[in-house]
Length: 110
Image (tube, rainbow, N blue to C red; front, top):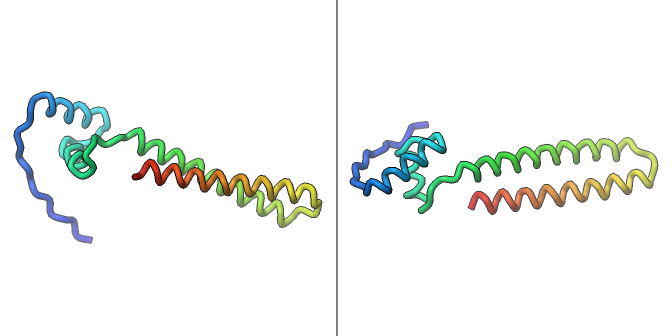
């Protein structure tokens, strides 16, 4: 896949704005040009903590999926009806939690 050509932009900024951009770049371990590009694209400074929250929620969602799969396996091997109903209830709660996690991720990404 061919990389898109990038064009250099030379601009003059107030010292305060330049300081904000460079300090934000240092804090977030991003280049100054990447911070400026993100500001122009989104209208705000990039938020690294938001990216970390999304990764954490994705990890929790994966754990929920693994737990759900184990419960399904247990349901298939269980003969006791009472235990089966409890496991089905728990599986429903896991699926509901996964849907909530996905909704939160979508909110954070927008």
